[in-house]
Image 1 (cartoon, helix red, strand yellow):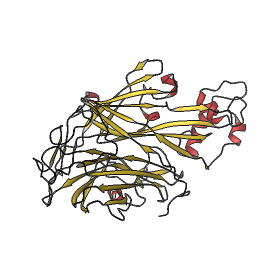
Image 2 (cartoon, helix red, strand yellow):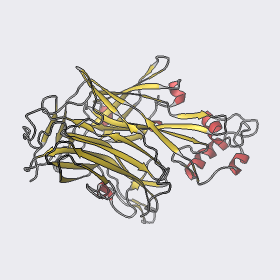
Image 3 (cartoon, one colour):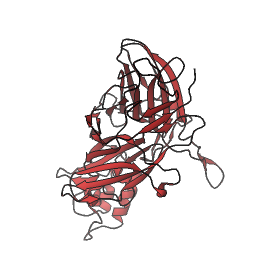
Image 4 (cartoon, rainbow, N blue to C red):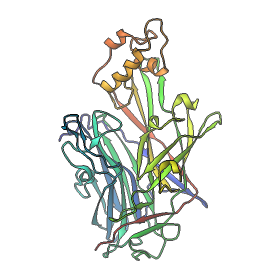
Length: 434
């Protein structure tokens, strides 16, 4: 496999997360803990199997003594069956989902290690083994010309018997996602949860059970809040449009990593969204099983994250994990963590914002073309802002002649701060081995 283009053109943006307990504000971003959670690990390839995105993680033991850590890597997407054509020929192999791999290693006192999640080199664990094959990964839901493997990772301090121990706030880390295709990158700090029971080195009460309840470990927030620029197109006078979208990852903190587990956690993410005028909208929601990563434009109707529905140039949203029969049996009210990154592209015709103008964009353009032409009004602002390539007020065959196939456009990333409010218990279970 080969890496993508523009490897020297990285642009780094820190994604911060802050949580507040009921008693006040406590920053978790970059803070140390005995338990770390990395909510977003991404690998991407083109359809020829060339790597286009990797996640490099760092892990630090700031205490001068050595410690064992357990690393649990989880494929966030559901399993899929193989797909065959009418003649019985395999179109797409089946894929494992919600599967996991773990490894253990020793961190030297004061040591920082890093590794590629594709290979695990030089110092870590290979996330890429969760869905190996040729070609690697599964079809990318964000792009018909890419493949992906994505999910999350938990890390915690353990003793020689495999049970969790108190390591106070001495573990910390971050993840950096390198998008080699667009020549950009972004990063976030791992969420740290301090062990509260006992002293450093002490085993915690129930080997194989981590209770984030404010007694054994710090508890996670119960509600998340963030401000955002609504997704959509903002026209520009220089002939290009600003195309915005936000990639939001949400993860239930409670997880069951045992071989004989109770299945992946399920909750419903319920959003309350407000615009600059103070109007608040409800009804935007998403069922989450195990883990969810989704562009704001991909949320189901009613979707108040898009600019036309929000009615202002900035908005605020809160999200809570709640019970709901609409998400199936076993759905619970669960504490959520997450990361969010805003993507901004200065482009025309890149309707799905994958940094390449391709056949998928032409399909959208064709819908505008069928409903516009000389003397005919454009059916939407998007048609005008993205596909009126000659600037004459309509979408017609002259624009089709100018359609920029295979043209690449730069894409940048910017910070969205998630803030936690309140406190809610969570529990993590795993098989202890020594």
